[in-house]
Length: 638
Image 1 (cartoon, rainbow, N blue to C red):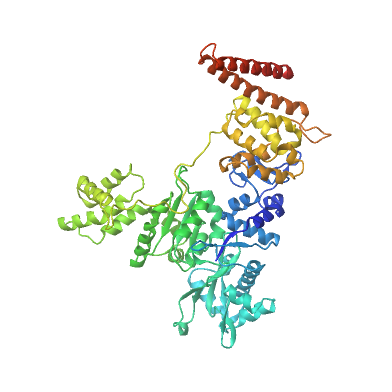
Image 2 (image 1 turned 90 degrees about the vertical axis):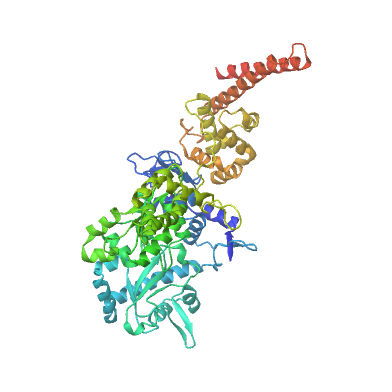
């Protein structure tokens, strides 16, 4: 198993990727001064452009919503990818071969090692296969069976084209021969999962099936879902999916996510349906946040994917996740399985089940788009569905069964995350059951305090990717304070135009002399990176990277913001730098404020020291020296 991408390869991707080119794929940029580009933010709705890019530095920042970072951060945020996925996507774009660290014993790898260029080749093979299957659906006589199947599901040719649904010929080698003619090797076809190897050579993995392309979140086709068509093939599985490969992991994809991601992010709502045709029916009905799993149960990996897109974090208004299930026993079982995962969300989860057990595709056929939308809008809280499903087998008119029912629902009530809401839920459930709320409370408390076979009940662990309820943070600088504003402007100069600062001035100002804690951390990073002496031998991007590496993660966003923020002064036309007078004024203001603080501290110490003592004399001399320095700085400022 491969481990993390080697750091030098990540750095190579960052250095070679053009932030401007990547951003221009999503934002119409225009010049906003020397070295700065500006446009409407792609991360929030706005009418006045507040999104800025500094290509030379390699950072972007939105002064409206606060999003910012480098080129990898941009891809991560815009396409809702993990860090590794974003690096791999940029590497594919640049033609860079990534190397991976080997995972240690028991360590987690990110997947099989992908040889040089193989990832791109495998995705290209799937793209060609998608076109081949779709062409076979709409043009070949044999594809008529698939066209009839889709027609019976309520879909026409335009619908098939929108989702690129296809058909795999029965001949057994049609796709394999086609891909060979396009220059793909037998090894590539087997690794991709498009062909299988038998005693007589290669043959198509999919034969005589309706084909749905499964795409990554970025829109690359990485696999297929296939549905059996012919009665004589009943020995074969009704549904068949691509086998796992270097580019496809069934728990790491959701069908329709490439089409739904923008709506999910905008609406902060996701609708999870059960099948490919359900996704099609939902999207065609206007429910453009619908996705489905691909031949596997909805699990932790799928939650991680959707949480990134929903911005499902503690402290934000809750997002909504709606599950649709068939009304039969299997559907109820699937719903209860989903409820077991409920604690992994900060989002509010709901269940939508049609009164007569129809799925979205059934509703689309029989009642039209309005019925599909109504199904989603009628969703009830997952908690309520779980309770009513649990209570269904009991005859609540009998005292003995009411007691058994209370014991059955008590674990659900005990698992409610927000303990302040638990009494309200207990009262509601007690009302549904016709029991005394106090009796149900007692049963619930028994569950919460009952020891397990090996001791007390375990504390529920936080999901692996769950955001902590409270993130560590530092106080933001107060820009209504003139001194902290001057500190900010000086940091901007040091990050954007380090050669405008005299090296001795940076040496003279100690981090502790700055008033804002975050400014202190960044100033320390600037000094540790070597200051102007080191910066003169670096590119703007390398200089900012050097500072980032020497500052704590809590201030990285502010470093990136300051590296992009426009200076409140004009640049000298001759040097292209801020004027010497402007920089000197900032340095003097910051130094003077630091001296004032030192003087105040020294005076306080002197007042607490016995008169005539050696310490008193030492503090007196120190105070006189500081006051002389203050007078000198004030003279320079006049």
